[in-house]
Image (cartoon, rainbow, N blue to C red; front, side, top):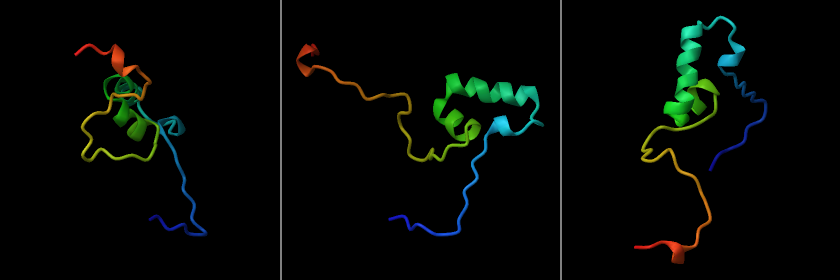
Length: 71
């Protein structure tokens, strides 16, 4: 259970906030968007995340009709 604390500031930044990044590094970050979206979300966009015990990272939740699946 996470304990909420008062007087705590969380500052979230990403590569867009750093005007001193070399273009080659920015290009590397942008390539991750296609090659490894989880890394991109964490390392380029600054989102909180975890890479531990991650088996599949390219899935999505969709509705489907189980009867239509031929097995």
